[in-house]
Image (cartoon, rainbow, N blue to C red; front, side):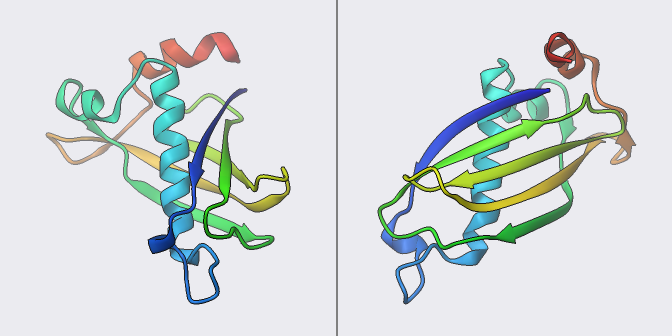
Length: 135
């Protein structure tokens, strides 16, 4: 298992009329979590696309809203990779408020796509090399 945490403050423009983080913004938090997790391994989405010619489109997402996140609150995004990727990669995400109370949780599954052929491919070796020591 590999786990990573990062933080993000709720900005005014991300809130609804009640001062709560707008529900559509949670997908952004999931993206922040997985991008920063990969960065913590020394991998960048930009390099994956430009150098390796691999994209990772979202194939499915599921989330559960537990309590609202509020304007100006510092959120902690915990991203968990419970297993080594094979034909796709599944991230579990937990979002906590400043009081370490769970705000939102879910999973997001991404595929690996060769940018030249536009076909799905197995998890690339360079990613597996970085992750294998944690499993």
